[in-house]
Length: 143
Image (cartoon, rainbow, N blue to C red; front, top):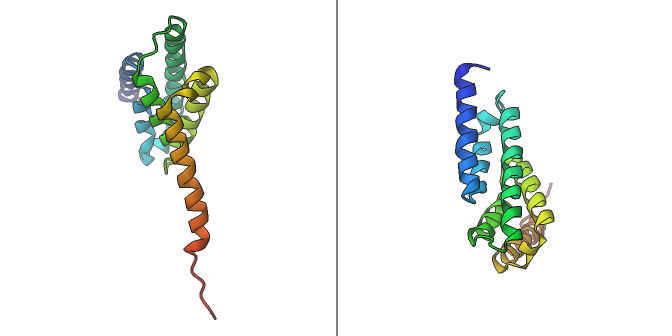
């Protein structure tokens, strides 16, 4: 890797760690929305940064849960991560699904938050409708 690439990765890590400590981990997923980054040599390092950031987010949340002082913005961030699980780019979906799985498995009490439940229900409803409309909007050509 070049010096510029290393500097970029270090800056991304520092910036995203700061955002994560302020309970904004969903912003990290935007890096994976760029197809040129997803096909570059940096993707392995960005993937590792995402896993490290998610681990630090879970660690920070664990400390907050013990003291019963979970910030209100966490549920909104979980909703953003759940929505990113349906993103059109495969890499965003993969990272978001791993992130969401870890958060929900670790903090199952978030499933009691009405915003998280409504977001899940909306996603499921849209998926059901899209599956049904696949056959409704089907065009058949007669030969």
